Length: 268
Image 1 (spheres, one colour):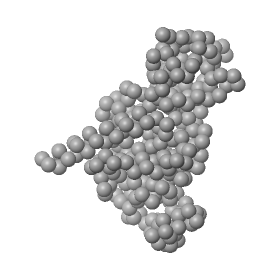
Image 2 (cartoon, rainbow, N blue to C red):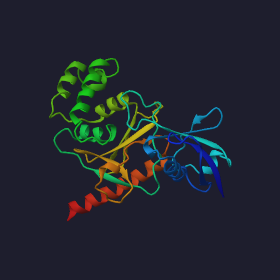
Image 3 (cartoon, rainbow, N blue to C red):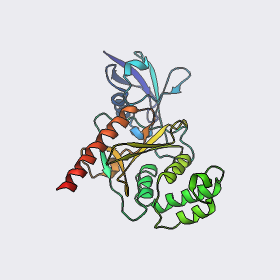
Image 4 (cartoon, helix red, strand yellow):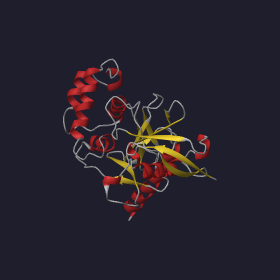
């Protein structure tokens, strides 16, 4: 069954119509709304009801569950497309497409791989902000000694911050905890060898989730891309809704497959 809704967009003075199938998932409906409104998925906010309120269902949510009716008015707004330091409460994350594919984005093995990986997923696919991410960790440890204390760090916070400032110092679980706190973002690190997941920032109400992968001595990140095995990083999606467990399942399967490829390569 399909319904026709009206959408008000930033680029038109009069509402336009869009036909939505109630058998589709939200991720598919969002693509239709994006095409009709001319607003990119990663910048699109959808408001419904009266008074209008933003709706942010998980990508896998059946459209029928949203209880939309024929001739309902949906308001499309254009919003910020990058995660903001210390504030993701109002961050809109585009639904992950069911047709997209996870891909691994490799980072330099220069003792700063964790920071490079976090820069890619947190700083809009940046390949140059690894040093900045490291310094943000250092500053947070210095400014929040009550949170990142000796018991947490294993040494005095001042000494730990000085040690972490060195470009050859590796980052690990502590730094992921710090970055999760700074960016108000869940960071999930998946082990390529065992497929286990280390979770940082859960239970804090953060709405955004990002994914890293590690081998025990190296971190990379993973992103979704519309094209299988695409080298076009420009099309990558790195930010996901923390409520979308389907994306986590897909990430886990992808990492398990990557780990299997890695083990086969090592055995040859």
